[in-house]
Structure formats: C-alpha cells, structure tokens
Image (tube, rainbow, N blue to C red; front, side, top):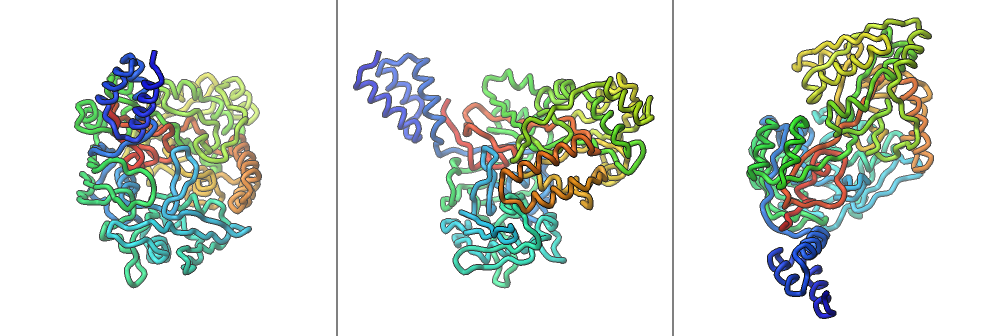
Length: 537
C-alpha cells in the first residue's frame, strides 16, 4: 500500500508519462520504488502514456496502390498512396476528424448565408507554407481555381461546377458564391484533390514546386516508389508527433504484411483479409478494423427488363443472405447494408429503418406477382472489384436458388471493367470509395441526370428531396429528408447493397493513436502520419 508521499510521486510520474517526459524504463523503476507491483505499474504506464502523444522517431509506412505516374498536381490525385501523401504534406480548408465530424484545417471557421448560396471561410492566421510564407486568400483562390474553368484537367472539376465566384474579402477570408444553395460545401472542401498550394504572381496555382502547408515537409519524392518527409514546425494544428517519415509503396499485399511482421515498416495499409487471422496471432501487431463509408453495390439497370419491374428488384434484394456474405467473404470486416447508399459512418444516418433480411419465400411471392417465376439473370463481376468479389457473387447465386432464381455469374476481364461493363451491362458488381456526406453520394450515383447514375433509377420524390436537402441548413430537417430518401432507395431503387467494407490496416504495437479513427479513408482518414505517435510499450 502506498503512502501520501508515494502517491504524490506516482501522480507526478503519470503526468510525466502523459507529457512524454519520461521513458518506460525510468517510469517502471520509480513506480516499483513507490511500492507498485509490475502489473500495476504497467497498467498505470499504459493509461498515462496513451493519454498524451509523445514526439520523436521516424515513422515508416508501407502503402498500397502507388503509381509512377503520380505527381504533385492535386487535380490528378487518384491512387491511395498519393492520397495518403497529400494529406501528409498538404492541407485543406477543412478536414474530417477522427470521430467522423467536420473540423477546421486552413480555415479556422466558416459561415453561410441563409440560403446556403454564399459561404465565407476565415483563414487560420498561423497557417504557413513550408517555404515560410503565410497562407493567404490569394493562395486559397488559386488553389480552388486550379479545378475550375473549361481548361482545367482536374478530376475535381465537377465538385466546383456550381461555384460562380470566389472573392478575397480583404480580411484574411474568402467567400464562395454558388449558383444554388449547398449546405455541404464545407464538407466538399475535404476532397483530397482540393489541397491548398501557393499562388503564382499571375494568380495560377504553383503546385509544381511541391510546396505545401501540411504537417510534414517533402524532402524527397520518388513517385510511386517512396517519399521522405520531415516535420513542419510551423504547422497550424496539433499533431505531427514523428520527427521524420518514410512512406514506401508496397503494392503487393504479401510484401506489405511481411515488411510489418519483420519490423521493416511500422504500419501498413489495406490487409489481405484471407490472412487476417494469422496476423492477429502475432503479439507485436495491432490491427485496426474501421467501419467505413465505402460500399459494394450491385446496380440493376432500371430501364432494362426484367429490372424495370420493382417487384423483381426487391425479390433479388430479398434473395441475398448478407450475414453469410460478411462472414465468409469479408471475414467479419464489414457493416451490413440495407439497400440504401448511406453508411452509418456518414452524417445524418437514418436509424431505425427495418433491416431487409434474407427471405426467399417472400422473394418467390414477389416474382409470382411480377409474372417472373423461375427468373434467370446475369451478374457481371471481376476480380479487380475487390478481393473476393467473384466468390461473393457465386455465394449470392447459391442463396438465390432457394427463391427459384438462377443467377449466372459472368467473370469479366479486369482490364476495362469500369469502361466496358459498369454503366453498360444490365447488372454488375461495383466498389465505391467513401464519400463524406449522403448528398455527395446520392448526387454522384442516384440523381436522375447524374452521369454515374449506375442503375438509371428515376424517382421524382427522391430527386425533389435531394434538391431540398442540399440547401437545408437545419440539421434536423435535413436528417428527416435523408431518412425518407433512404426508404425510397431501399424499397424502389435499383441497387442491391450487400455491405459497407471496413478499412482494415495494421501497425506495430509501439505505434499508438487516439480513441477514434476517421472513417473517410484508410489510415485514420489518410492522416495517420500526423495523428499517430510512438509509445514505449
């Protein structure tokens, strides 16, 4: 039992651990002197050390999906490794916090006009580029205009198509003027293309230099291969605990896992789920399994028979055993979906909508009503959709047999799948990346005139609600609209959605992070390098 003096010592030791001022060895020595057992001291160290990040060390990350065609041009970002790098050396107006909420980055605050047609963003006065210059309104405007106009080649052009003007208010703030109200504009500013870069004298964006205002400064970039970075001491937010970073592209999943097990890297992105159980047995490895807003969809073309009949569409939805798919295909690393493209990891998720379960008898009844008994349909898929995609469709076909449905699974070539199959074949499997809000997702793939309306679904009420919700600033009213939209998509839509796949990645045990992990991208919303730290465990 410890006396008052010893308790004071332990309190001071805990404070020192939280502040990163004492090593584990020293902590354990003094704790033992104060009368704590090794088990109790270890528990106290773990709780205290995890509570407060400590600075220091070189963090080595093995990343998937890298390409030698990657570049500093934010308009061309497409691979995950470049998205990870971008969030490490560049900043954005806003960011997605570990708990999934929207937070400040280069913009310290923002406000909207009552109709959500004008948005003003105040720039953080402490934000500086790695070159030493302060971030100004001119830089923000140049960065946004890089993705606007007829001549832009940016993949983010569509995101800013409704922006009519961006003005410098002369008080370290900028105002976006929109053609129609958009309550989601601050969320759109988190898009990985919309990085803040310096402006040239002529007002164009100077992306070529690789200068940024993110947590780390780029020292060396071998695109698609490796990147070396050092801490930007002038970063305007908390974090950036590592001294240096080595980001290494390891496209092969076996190579990534081996590098982690051998200690050649400290963390890796995207694990191969088939080997997950084996990796979980390693006492030196921690696995992060994070529910996400990414999705697997199976769009049916609603203007093509037999999918033009809503009873047929719902029969196919009822003929899937989602629980078994999650268990056998994702090994439990997924969130069960309900045939509307709104993940629990997104804001405004509609709680309490009745879950659609596997019910082949009800499916049979709907097919009889539609005059489509003994239905035979083709389902296109490719291995490249995701690891296990073909097996998923084959297992689904087995489920459907109980409803008298024959699903012919057509394995398509990986090459050209999204140009030759998606949006063209009557029914196929697709993987969608995470989107920050339901409006972004619905506008991209469910709006009546959207270029990527993958099921060609037309629902007048859904589109009316989509326009209303986009400009609605009252969160409660907006949530009610999304709930009705979800029910419409579930009961009338043309998309079967089996599950939302989790982000599954891993780290050595001495790498620590906060309580929550952002659901927007792999690796804590692609911000592991600035949010995580080393702890002596």
